[in-house]
Length: 191
Image (tube, rainbow, N blue to C red; front, side, top):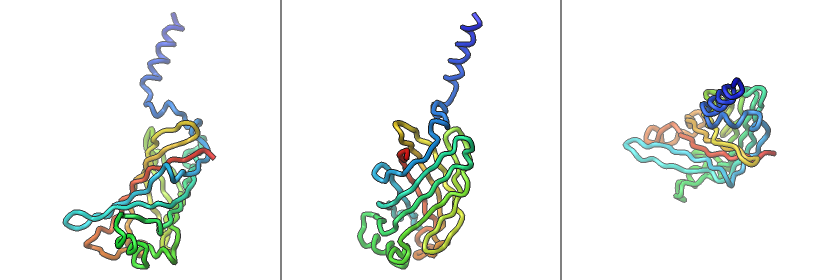
């Protein structure tokens, strides 16, 4: 009888557990290389009176290391190549690559290196780090939501807001917003 009660309690506990908790941190722990073919980095910039534009970066690379003994020691390193920016409008793409915005010829990389990872929920974390663009480095924060793990891959949905003026990219303000909204879907392959 005790075995039956214990078995029922164990099943009830498993059912009460969030689905995401079914994958233990130990199972997800390890090092991953971002797969650009299965990932995307999108952004939007609003415009006064509505509208604005959105775009994406076609070239990027990165790694994610999840530490199962201390989530705070997990690491994210990311590099975006601004010459790969695309909005679907050639004139805007050329302008974004120019020295008025990304200065891709002289600053060919945008880098993010995490300094801390803080768990904020069962499937979410706040990733703080240093973002470097156009030779300027500032602290930035992004929210990462765990989207699952399967067959040696891991998925995250990452969002954040960056002030472009900090990096000398404030051309067009205040007509165009100073805030760049990032929306990223990242898939990593265990390395």
